[in-house]
Amino acid sequence: MTKKGAEKKKIKIIKTSQKTGVEKILIENFVSLQKVLTEVSVNFDKLTKQISQLLEIFEISAKNLAEKEFKEGKEDKDLKELMKKIDSLIDQNKLIARGVVMLHEKGLGEGATGTREEIPTPTTSSQITIVKPQTKGVEGYQKSIS
Image (cartoon, rainbow, N blue to C red; front, top):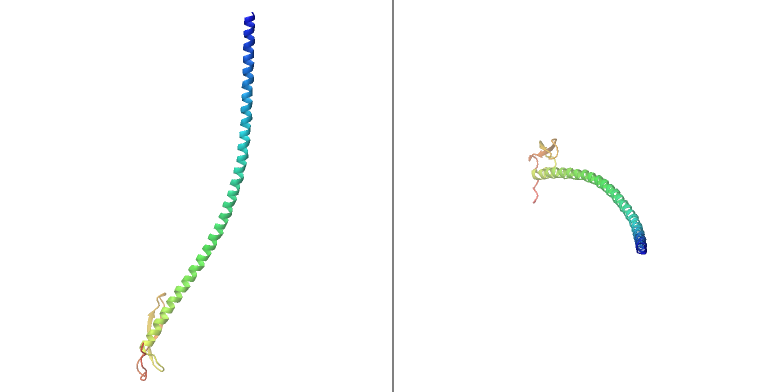
């Protein structure tokens, strides 16, 4: 019986030493897992803060873009109105210049009588009346060199 009793003791010692070895390994693994989880949670907190800051930057830039687009839209509208007015002035200037040239070419002088001719304006369908001079009574007038 001594052999059997010694064998039983050896088996019990091996089993208990294996159980304590496994328990130690499990405890070490659990502790390392907790360290890793703590590190992950700290890094996750940092990432959350950085994302929040990035979102704030996007909000600020979106507000600035919206204000800029609103201002540009207003400037574009004002610019279009101004361009229309300038175009109208240019057309009026052309019409006046044409009338002055016609007066100059026909030699309108003092005391001259004339006939009326209707000339359509380039911007509207309304007409302007221009007096065409008659050459009767303009005896001392000389045309200019130009």
